[in-house]
Length: 428
Image: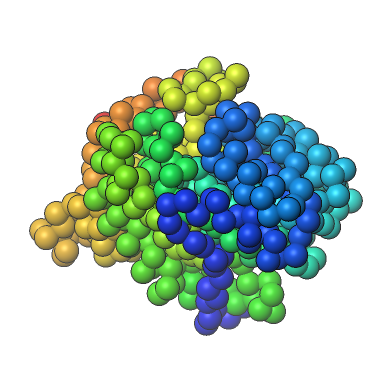
């Protein structure tokens, strides 16, 4: 099969500015919808962002029905609960107010209520599911993020824990992209510092992974344009967004975590999340994300500080970044210049390494480790309860994540993954 010769750029519309949450009712009115399912989690349901959205919808003369049972780090069971609510409600539009868990849940509700499948796994990425294409356009979905991390308001991906495998998987299609993302810096004001740190490090890894992913021209060319994957590999347009996101992370992440009243830093991190989302939403992510899914899915007793849940949790951004330094030391030999460019955008001094390819992975890994230490992340997988005896299960949970692992710039089979997980047990 010949190699790919084209790439496609697909993005959601976004609107940025303090107070734009108050405009959601008018947006829905202009879309001609009347009955809206507002999706959020139990913690946010009584807080200002959700209440502002509900008041705006009511002021526009529309009907809003609140669903506030989103599971932080959603599961197939929590998706099914939200889908059942959506199916029975007769909704013609959706509004998601929350972090990536909420926006991803709303995407799934939109898909499964618009085009109900025979089996839940029909749309889920292969090889766990059938990976069937989304049959047609979906209903309007407006995403209002309250965290600065996932960039889910710009992507066509919906991620969940598949409990039977103790690993994350998901659904991917350009048609899942929200109709509009409302980026309101006022909505991140109540984000706890630990959440700001974890979600901010997710931005960091999104941007590095998309910039260092296999180039789009190394992928096989599809038979039809409509089956070109959402995650195509690094490309000239995604590169621009990813590098700028890294520069913004370098300048504003620590500021935003240290001082939640720093309005400029919080606003810039919200923008950085969307910048990185545009980058990885079209280029894709690779090994740190693929490896993170069994880490968060197989959590034992660890409960991350700052997250209000009734269950053990390794937040997504944390599970990703714990694997990142070891991964980039491994992948750097494939494209050392790109790894050095990413390190430089993150503030590292790369002046002495341009001709020393073996240094690229170490420089990038060391810079990421600096951020982990500064933001008080756990010191590797051991610090959240894993040991070397868990490596076979972690590898087994990573291998089915073809959608992302195949974008690694360097091949990683079972032996390579085991070696990376072993190196990730302790970060510094």
